Length: 500
View: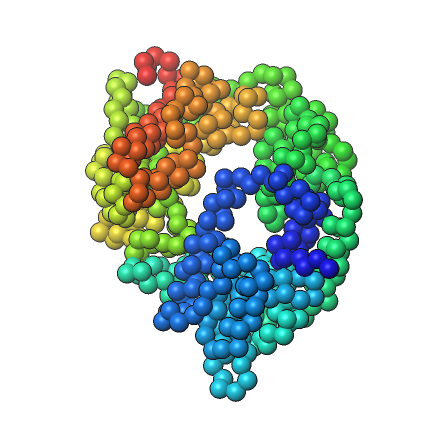
């Protein structure tokens, strides 16, 4: 009889076809870079959890890669007869196998029992976590491991790192004992169903759908979609299409914009449909110029790059907090003279304070408009800095008051079919200013790549010459972000008279 791992049962819960492929054709799986980053974060959080739950370092770790399954199960059984923390303890029974992140012995002096803790890098308990922990509890119970409680630990995003490698408080425990133990019959049914699915000679016939990326991004998506006939103008190009409306259209077999009834669309969605089908741009030049008229030159154009860590590395910061490490600032004078200022900290130290002081210095005290693209992001980062550095609060909030968002103007006044329903600056720029392109940049071409480059630059083993190349690429990318805003402002303001 096959023993199904917890991950295989979770694959079944997502999609029977995914489980079949996991077992019979794992070579077809293609995990995205984002998925790989998720795995890495999970490993990092797991390592920190071991330090949190075993501060004296007296626990034991099962290493399945070096020990192998049989030895890992045998060693786990021996360790669970003793009173010490055990990490990655393995159990098998009832047609399944599982490895528990943390097993802590109870403090009662009589019969030995265990607190099982599953550790997740998310900031809340998800529905699929509950399935996950139900499997863990079931397999441990069948294996004869006495459980006093079952809990899930996730990251507490409100916790502030005090520094000095002290991560107590990073994880928040949620007791799921009653729920997990009550679902044994469900888990048994999953195991039975998994056996039926993988026993089939051919893969299950499952249509593409919402399960392809929920609750996980499926690595078999490229394989499953290889022969899928894709609509020329897909419905998902409609901006802010609600999931309910998307499901309604799918139920009617509508997947192309041309087949979507106009009466189901709001004004912006109808605009996207109309100009996509006619392959014509839309530009309310008079309206855009009127929107910008209250903000005459001189003006500033600002953009941030940020980094976030599941496990904070700088004191005073929270898990997953967006921490600015770079900004680009273009200043445009009334006569069209353009100047550029920039900040980038690759020292490895917390860049927040130096970022703050440089931002204040370059934005100055003059009441100039500060143009950004998607103001909620910059305003939130500035407000967070104001909270961290009270001595700069007044100056930072004054900058916030001067921020003018170009994104709503773009959404309301401009659309080109090449945007495919997106008003990101990377979608609007090549349409409105075709001579500029992010694809011409070397190395860093988007925010995700900027984060990866920043992390690489901070790594102690990164050679100095590579670090300098990363510096140049980051500066070039962020500079283009603000220059792109300058050029979009020029288009929207109707200022063809300026040589930019």
